[in-house]
Length: 314
Image (tube, rainbow, N blue to C red; front, side):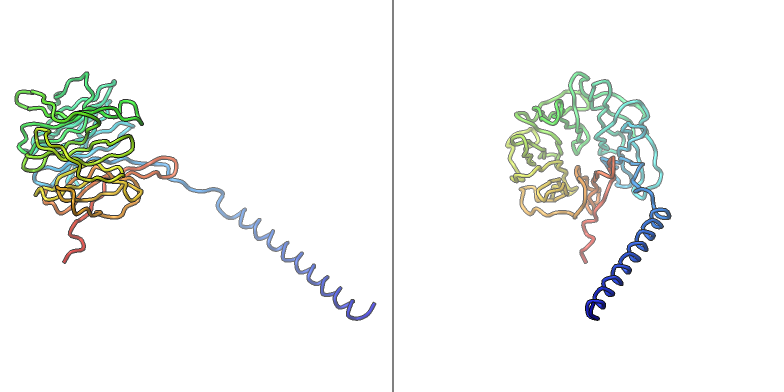
């Protein structure tokens, strides 16, 4: 055997030996990491749901939903996060709270035993009384600016995910007379303009398209404001009546937008992750609050967010 062949064989033997040693060292390292490292992945176990803020006339407090022991209960709290008080404690769900213009009452939807009923209570949680018939499922109460009547709608989710026809009504709180305002199709989320002359609402166009409409206070002259193939809805008027906030998934996820009352000048309020819906203006018109719901690990969270509209202005 010549020297060249012997040299090559020696090099191959050396390489083989080095590889064996490296493999053994790597196996030992992996074993050590497995023994001393984590044995699993942490995930979020506890979750909370806070939703649907509505503000006092002076803008210092809000009423909102928080889930307690699996039930949607109503709380009130100052906007600085202090003085949180639980208002409802019964074995029912309580949705869509709306603080009255005079600050004395809160309208909400009471849901239990197959009943969905708009009810009224004092701001301390007492004096609860029903407003709408118990045999008609009613949701989304919204106060007229003078506080003398409420707009609401019938439930459009009786057989989800398919929508069913829903009408918008108003109820006079003095006489308890109920008047149908808007019918024909799926009409929900009524919202009075600050001067009481208009009403914005959501209307389904087909099975997958929803638009923000506006009509006169008596329901006449309804017209489409958003005209977008996406799902637009949840309208809310600014306190001065110059803007309407709404939620839309026109950019994939649901986000909050504002527009002029004629549908022009649409602008996104902020980027967000999760499902943002149901915007509400603060009484000074400088901020918009809204819930964002997200899937987190094996459950979901809903929290209330706020955007200061003048945050980037000088």
